[in-house]
Image (cartoon, rainbow, N blue to C red; front, side, top):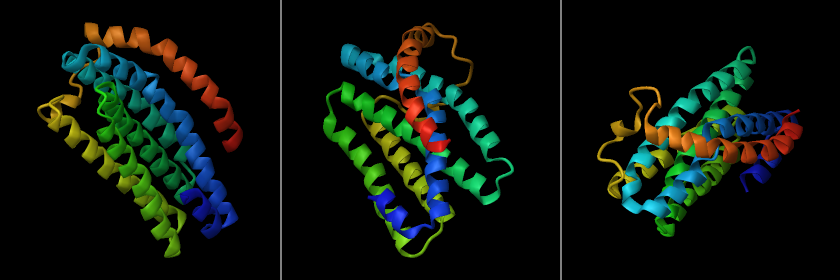
Length: 213
């Protein structure tokens, strides 16, 4: 719905820039997931509440993997003025979305599909509704990128609240890594994740690359 309204309200040039930014962001954020969502959902389904070390290790790995993604987004945005800022903001929005989806996959592993649905509806419906409002008020591409980021930040906060409420973490600080991922759990996750990640990344690369290039 948002794409249709954006095509109607934005200029042809701005709509092209919007799709370009989404395509670049989509390509890059795949590097921060690398199959960890599916792998963690399987581990939660297999181990139940005993998968807490895997949950923490996965968040730590994703945060480390997010650093090169942020660097690449910044490099892609440099020298492009407002368009570069839009590219960075939308890329950051998509990156944060992978963390919301990661939490949703944890609850999928627990068969708590109602919580998963709440998280996904929050970000998707929120982005569509508030983005449409911004465009309806003749907002520009930068305003659309900012409201999309704001909705995703609120969605991530909602996801982390659910994660704490379900007992997976006792405080948010546990999700922040204080060292390189050298634990046995991290190594085990990486060994299983990289083949899955490659099988997901390369098939998704071609259509996104054609769109942006």
